[in-house]
Image (cartoon, rainbow, N blue to C red):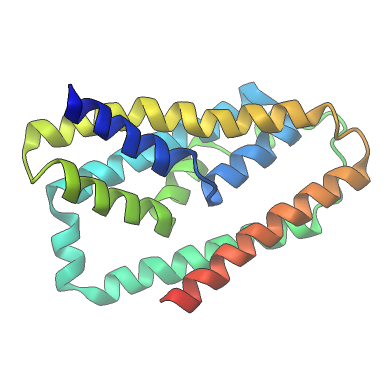
Length: 195
């Protein structure tokens, strides 16, 4: 049971802390509401768990052998973050009757995780610390992570949905969007500087 709680605590710490996926969940909740944002939450969770299992079963070794592949993933991640920051920065802030179908999709959430350096670090650190390459532990960790990640990213979407009631004026939405754009751009700059 101690290992179970330790895995859950790691998953919570890695999933609920601010990062690109959570910023998008917050913005989606504010713009489209909680229920439409659950597509993003579910996609991000599934995307991360697939990444986690892939790392557990050997993708990390492949990346060690082909460092250019890891570098390409990092640069695609930076480009994706900057693109999202741009889209947020130029948004007009009009919520109106925001079409829930235009909110982030499941595939968008999943792809974000594969381009998210925070997700790669969490997957690498978690698999290294808790599984030792043991297949049953990899699957156990993935199951725990699925629940914790879904709830964590979902909290960000719920927080955004609560903000929605305070975002009736386009000026406020533009301000929130620009703050989120700055956070995403800052994440991208940090990744370039740290790389």
